[in-house]
Amino acid sequence: MKHTAGNYEAFSRPRPVEHAADTRAWIVGAGLAGLSAAVFLVRDAGVPGENVTILEKSDIAGGALDGFDVPEKGFVIRGGRELEDHMECLWDMMRSVPSLEIEGASVLDEFYWLNKDDPNYSLRRATVKQGQDAGHEGRFDLPKAAQKDLLRIFLASREEMEGKRIDEVMGKEFLASPFWMYWRTMFAFEEWHSALEFKLYVHRFVHHIGGLPDFSALKFTKYNQYESFVLPLISYLRHHGVVFQNLTEVTDVDFAHRAGTIRATVVHTVHDGVEETIELGEHDHVLMTIGSLVDNSDEGDHHTAARLNTDPAPAWEFWKRLAKKDPSFGRPEVFCSSIEKTKWESATVTTLDERIPAYIEKICQRDPFSGRVVTGGIVTAEDSPWLMSWTVNRQPHFKKQPKDQIVVWVYGLFVDTPGDYVTKPMSECTGEEITQEWLYQMGVPADEIPELAAEGARCVPVMMPYVTTFFMPRHAGDRPLVVPDGAKNFAFLGQFAETGRDTIFTTEYSVRTGMEAVYQLLDVERGVPETWGSTYDVRSLLDATTRMRDGKKLDIPGPEMLRKRIMKRLDEGEIGELLEEYGLI
Image: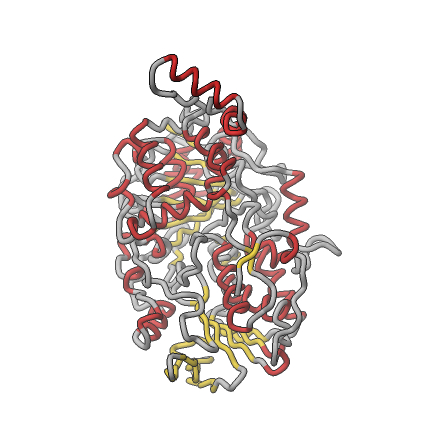
């Protein structure tokens, strides 16, 4: 497998791999990583679709890319996905998946046209004092010490950041800045999370630093992620004959170690309550999703709080069994052993009263019923004790959603802190109480809140014990390679497999693991698109520097005569032109 960039590899079509017709593949998990692996097996490796089986524990595909209408409860979206133009593997896949909305178009075509016609940006990123503008006006307000912290972590090696928390490498001035508020609420970082992951994020998205305050860097789907992405993928795979076997939990896999190689030999499953085994033949492969951010999630309802489920989690127990069989299979306990540090809660509010959308419109300054961009990303109530954020995407967010309803996604980073209006932690609140706190943070008069929360909305809270597990401080080897050294017929997929420069908690990461697994195991002759290289582009770095300094020009030190000589030399060359173009001199 090789990583490549440019149109030569991007537009090429690989020939079927050796033994493609005889290859059988078993994919563990029907989340985005598993679905992606199936696409690349069929499209690029030339494996017949009927030879590919996806084994899924639940009765529905999609994993964390969900969007449901739960009977007696309401619409539920556990989380949203922030997309951008340089998710190279994702868009490589979606160019081949037919749109379910536009005849003759791909999902990529549909997405591209939508975001061309209706570009995303926020008119109010943060509020204080019950819905008033926070007044940052797009500034980061990073003191010099905070700028130095960012530069130091950017230039540090990966090894220097391993095992460290963000608050161990970033000072108090940085953690008190609007930059950190924008960053942590957008990506769900806590101060105790991994300094290494924070560093990788800065490198990966350095070209979008300027878009943090208004979300102009982001793009979104027309509907929820399940209807916009998962359903077209399922349709594509079924059309090609791929087999979906739901209600099948993979409990273990046997391996044979011989002369420095490792082969998977038997897959153990429980299907409809019956234990079964799958014997792997000469040309059989198993691609396993390990870990899960939504394992043991629990839904409450408008009158019931979601509970924190600390029972053994199937996806994590599966990885733990695998990890005992070889040290190269990773260390799952690093990620899943601190639920109090990895949990948070989201809630889906569906409005039933026309008075609530008026308050939404007052803050986002757009008509939420227009069918176009509404909030343009999350709005953070930055003085909220829960550090509450909420967003309204294009409506309707569900195809079956009534025209007079708005679906809102709400989440809190500090779920164990009492609220302002509801004086109890978010983790103990019913959907109605979460709605009360959200209405309060939007500026709804206190005397209207009880009635509107009780009768004017329906809210489904969801507690997720493992939702930020991948942000826990880690070392090399804690995550296994997508294809471990010596592996002959198996690979690891998803957010807990190691790919290199890309960043977890993104759709791109899941798709990349699926692509790398197939290309490496089956020796697909085409290159895998490299992670976007803005961190190596001096133009992106200069632009990010300007934005992080809020447009302030560089101070050239030294006596006046020396400064003039330096400026004269800069004016005579391309370096000076670049510095001037990006507003640094």
